[in-house]
Length: 376
Ligand SMILES: Cc1cc2nc3c(=O)[nH]c(=O)nc-3n(C[C@H](O)[C@H](O)[C@H](O)COP(=O)(O)OP(=O)(O)OC[C@H]3O[C@@H](n4cnc5c(N)ncnc54)[C@H](O)[C@@H]3O)c2cc1C
Image 1 (cartoon, rainbow, N blue to C red):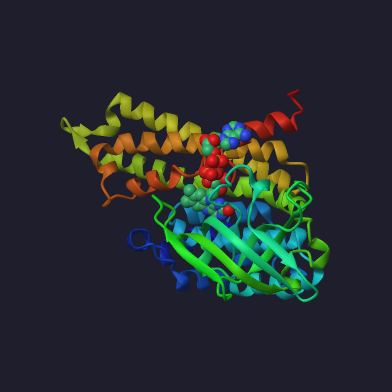
Image 2 (cartoon, rainbow, N blue to C red):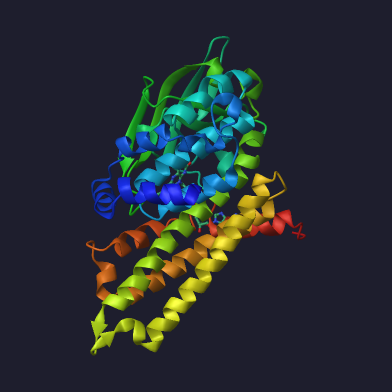
């Protein structure tokens, strides 16, 4: 039902020509996002007592796949609301934060941006240098974040900071909610290859002050940022990225399948050429495997079962395989897969980041071996 309703939404509210325009102009379609919120789609990660429809990871993953099959501009905003804000608040926020913010996620699509990466901090997240100090009334933040996607359209930057002595690695980190409009916050756009819409930003914090209630988890959350960051939310984030890659790959396969029947060379459609048929058989098969990996991990997460290994495997396999799928589909398009008039060119730009985002493929391999306790 979720899939059918959202697929109709995508066709009606996110037609191809608009998806192309949003990508070209790096534009976030707030009106379309608002319609998604009005229809209740942000409530899929929010418990009923806070105005949502309950924690439905399978439904959320299906929604991400559907939206990503058409436009990252809408899909990234959706993820920032349902997952970055909704799922994290449910897992790690204080009761006061849940009561204040979760109803806004469900009803209005309140959004977080992830402020984790820094100029000198990528995979080694625990080495962040942005600092936070607190007194009895406020927290003061100084430092720089990089690759902060959707920072300008978000209500809060979910910011990982060093809040204790550097030598206390993992015990000296906190998460702080920082509105991007706070004095001392400077946003500077980065020009990325793809993932257009909400934009990606360098963020500088200069003596930025927020109240103590903005510490994630409340004052008790001070110096507990690491355990909050690597909890169930991070496992589900891997499945989210797999679902994004799956959506893009699905769109590429559908387009290549259709194009192969329209494009005529040597007097017949190219779908009759054996090498093209084999490419299409390969991508259909790989897509099916990606779907199974993604939804198996989503099902486990939905049931509250341990999902660390399956989430890392899904992130690794689906993102790498989806990239191969899209590049093969581009070959089916020949030269037309390389020009901006066709969506295939955008799928290629968007898919290339999937094995990098949310923990690279190499990091997922480390995770899998470590979680399965392979001696080091
Ligand atoms: C378009 C875009 C949007 C993004 N959005 C956000 C966002 O919203 N918020 C945010 O915080 N970040 C965001 N990121 C950053 C992203 O999460 C990082 O790029 C990612 O974590 C990897 O970090 P890095 O690129 O600095 O690579 P590095 O960590 O510098 O790694 C470089 C290479 O070394 C490998 N490597 C590093 N360490 C190891 C190891 N221990 N074992 C094996 N291999 C290793 C990596 O796999 C990679 O191939 C975004 C990035 C992009 C491109």
